[in-house]
Each structure stands twice: as structure tokens, then as C-alpha cells.
Amino acid sequence: MLLRIQHETKLSYSEPVAETVFEVRTAPPSDEEQTNLGFHLRINPPAPVTLYRDGFGNRVDLFNILAPYRELLIRATSIVRTHRDPNPAGRLQRPFDPACEDYQGLETIEFLQSSPLARPSRELEGFLAGVGRPGGRLVDVVEHLSAQVRMALIYEKKVTTARTPVAEALRLGRGVCQDFAHLYLAACRGVGLPARYISGYVHQEGEVATHAWCQVWSGPGGWVDVDPTRGVFADDDYIKIAVGRDYSDVPPNRGVWKGRADETIAVSVKVEPIDRVPSDWSDWSTAQAPWSAASWIQSQSRQPRPKLSSQVGYRQQQGQQQQDGTAVRVSGPPARARESCETPPVHGRPEA
Image (cartoon, rainbow, N blue to C red; front, side, top):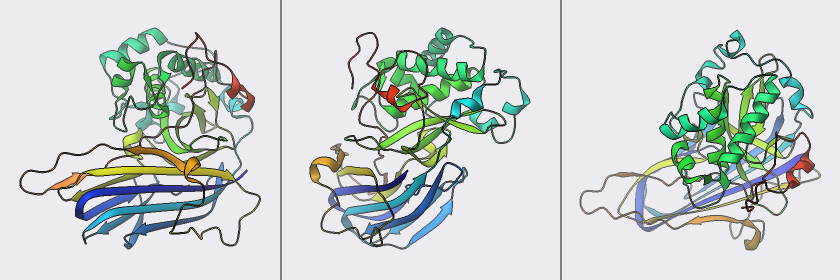
């Protein structure tokens, strides 16, 4: 599938700010599951961009803005062709043995450890006690844990934030795809299955597009993408951006700035299928985004920060919480076919 992704972040300030240091992770990598056919990043106020790879191999675009400004606009455009394995469950047919040396290698050992947003807690211990020690084939373990996560959380926006740890999501019993992914990571690691966090996008007609899911280690078959929010394996509608231990390793934007302002963040994302790579695909008008206002507004967080009363210091820029448009309540294991996304909720729980 050929997909165009357009991601805009707008940061507005009530007073001028300056001395910004900013990181952006919005460029899709090319690997065995997708090919990045082009990526463009535009920043206003304009600033030189330095590209580097973080410790997980993700592309990071870094820039500084020293002069004062009151609005920062970041527009990332990319075109990706996805070509995922049509039968990912086929790589999970081996018996699950957490003591297997395949799970203790250099590529996996870090993803068996706790992480800042999926660390041990009393709430997590209670959840893992209910999960038990699943056995059988690896695919059975993957599906069982996914079902347990969807039983523990209801999809609901605006109850968690970009920095909510898994313990708080469990206390609330609700959250967005980011929280589902963190709980699934903790569940996998709790039974000895290496798992890592994926930041990306999903193409879903009529819905907003940022998303988070997980990868589990299959051994010789490598990493397999599992979406615990929808209860499915990732297909060609999923575009990976970055990989890490949890969200704290792969935020789409991260930065600091200096000033006495209140900050507002607004994010818009669109993922759409296209027939071919257009010759002018990078021409993104500075006057307006290339889709209607009704379709592109994903979130607009109005969270004023208290003004500094004395000496001005550096302040952390707001993060984008990863959330898709809807959650699908399914009964049982992750579906192997896309049409299973239409399965109705279980236990009478409302759709988000």
C-alpha cells in the first residue's frame, strides 16, 4: 500500500520565548516491512536541522531557535510503501519457553527490563497475578496477553497524558492506545517475553492517525507487530516511525524553551492512500494544510503553564500523546484478518 503521511505540530506562546532546543521523530524508516520513498521537514521560524540516530537507531531531527518567537510550526510530510508479512502469526508457532536463549540475546535483553512508563508497581503486580503464567505456543501467549489488556482497560481519551505511567492507567481502568501498549509491554516482560514500543501511524478511514502498538520477539522470525488496542496483528495500514522501551524513548516531539509564557500545543495528522508518488507531493502550502479543517484537527491541548515569578529558566515543551480515533473491543485473541476490527465490544462496554 502506498500512503502519504502529513503531520503538523503547532506550538503557540502567550509571550515571546527563545533559546529553543527541539527534537522531532517523524521520519518513517525503511526496513523489511515498509519503504520510505521521501521525507520533508519544514520549520517556521526557519532553523538549520541536524540529523542523528538515537540509541535505538531511530532518526532524530534536531534544531535550535535562539531568537524570540511566539509560534513554532513543524510540518513533516512523507510517502511510504508498506509491504508487511500477510501471515505474522505464522512466525509465532513455536512453543513459548521464557528460558530459551533466543530471549536472552543482545537484541532482546533490554526489552525484558522495566522502563520509565512501564515500571513495576502494586497495580501491575495485581494485573500480572491475574494473567498467570501462560503456556503453549508463542502465538497463544501473545493472544492471551492482548485479550487480558483489553479486559483491563477501556479506551477513553483525555483521562491520561503523554507521561502517564502504566500504574496510573490501571488505577483508572482506561486510557488511549499509548496506555494499552504500555500495559501490554509490561505484561509480556512480566512473563519473560521481550517486547518493545512502536510509535507510528495507522490508516483508518475517517479517523485520526497517530498510533502506538508493540512488537514481540519470535526468535528466528524476528520482531512481530501486535496491536493490543485493536486486538490485531499489524497489516499494511500501519506505518512505523520509531522503536523504544516505551513512549518516553520515542516522543514525536521533545524540547525545552526559555521564557515566561503559557504554551498551547495543537497537532494535526492525516494518512491517506495514493495511487503513485506525485511530482509535487512536497509542495505543502504555507497558507493552509492540504485537507479541510473538519478532517485534520486531531487534538488541541489548552494547558496553561504557570508563569515564572522570578528568574526565567528553561522549561520543557509539551508532548503529543499518541492516540488513534477509536478502540475496538474484541472478544478473544488478536484477529488475523482486518475485518475483525469490526467486532463489537464485549461485556457491554461502550466504544470510545
